[in-house]
Length: 503
Image 1 (cartoon, one colour):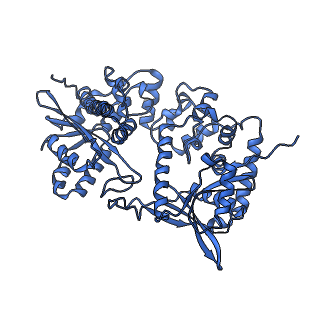
Image 2 (image 1 turned 90 degrees about the vertical axis):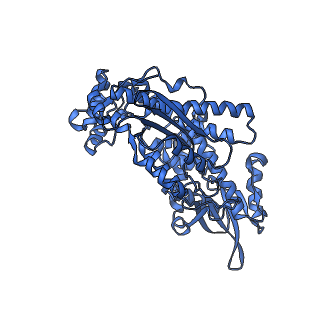
C-alpha cells in the first residue's frame, strides 16, 4: 500500500530537530499539547515584533500580507508565487517544495543581473542569533529556492537590546539584520535529509520511544512534556530536586545507571547542600539551624524595611527612554518593622498607562526612610532595578543608591539554615513561606498568585477595552499579592531571628 507523502511545515521540521517524538505527537495527537502561559506570551511577543517589522520594511504601506488562515493555503501559495512578479514587499509569503512548506516573514524585491530577484528576512523577537535560528533560515532558504523563488539572500533580523526608544512611534533601529546567506547556501542536502527523516517519523504508526530530558526545553519549551512524563515511571523523590549544578561524576553515574530517584545517589557524589536536601527528603524531618539564622540576622538592627518589586518588560518598548526587554518596575510593597515590633505598610502601584518609573522611584525613597536594613528575597533583582532607576534619574540617584547600600538578602539565610521536605529542592519564597508559615499561602490569593500573573494582570489593566470595575479588581489583586510578598519576608525574619512580632 502506497502512503501519501505529508507536506511538513517549517515548524514541524524544527519540532523534529528538537525531538522526533514531538513531531510525531504534533501530527498524530495535537490534542495532547498543553502550551504554558510563557509559551503563549512568546507567541504574542513574536506577533508584536512582526507588526513593527512590517512598518519598518514597508514604511509607505505598499506591501501585501498573505493570510493563509483567511484565504486558504492553496490560494496563499498561488498568490505568493504570482506576487513575485511584482515590485512590492510581501509579508508571510508561502512556498512549498520537496515535501515541505514555509512562510517568509518579509520578502523584499531587488535586482540581480537586471532581473527581478528577492531578499528574504526572518524576524525574531530574540536579542541575538541563536543556533536554531540558523537551522530555521536553512529550511526557509531551501524551500524557497526549491519552489523556484529567485532568492539572492536571506537575513535574520533580531532586536537590538541596547536601542533606546525615542518615542512618537519611531522604531527605526529596533531591529538588527544578520546576513546568513553564505552559511545556509550549502546546507541544502542537510535540509533534504531532515525532511526525509521527518517524513519517515510522520509515517510511523506509533510514537518513537524517547524519554524526557533536557531536550524537552531546548531550544523550545515542549507542550507535550506533561504527556510524555505521564507515560514514564513516576519517581517518588526525583533527582531534579537536588539543588545546584550536578558534578560531572554525578551526572555520569546517573546516566550510567539510568537513575531517577534521589535515594539511589551515593552521598559521596553530592555536595553538602545536596546531601542535606537528600537527608531531609528521605527522612521527612525539617532542617532548621535557628541559632545560625539568628546569628546572621543579629547585625541588622530594627527598624527594618522589607521590600519587593513587580515589573513589566516589553520586547517593543512603549515608553520613551526605555530599552527592549528592560524590566520596568510598576509596583512595590514595603513593610516597616519598628524596634517595638510594630508593623507599618507602604505601597505603590501605577495603572495609568504612563511610564511609572520616576514616580515609583520617588515613592520608594519616601517609603524606605534613611536608615535601617532593607530586606529583600533574592537581592540581585531589586538591586539591579534600583541601579537602572538611578541611571535614568540622576537627581534621585544618591537616594536610590543609598537604599541599595542597606539591602540585606534573606535568601542566603534561608538556603543555609532552613529546608523543609515540601520545598522540593527550591528556596523560592513561594516554597519557603508555606513551609515555615503554613497559615500564609499564595494559593489563597484571589487572581494574582505569582509574578507572571502580576505581569498579565498589569497588561490587562492597561488595555484600552478593560472596564473600570475590572481595572479596580485587578488593582486590588495586585496590591494584595505584592503585600504578601513583603509580609512573607517579615514573617520569615521572625522565624529566622526567633523574635516575635507586635501588632
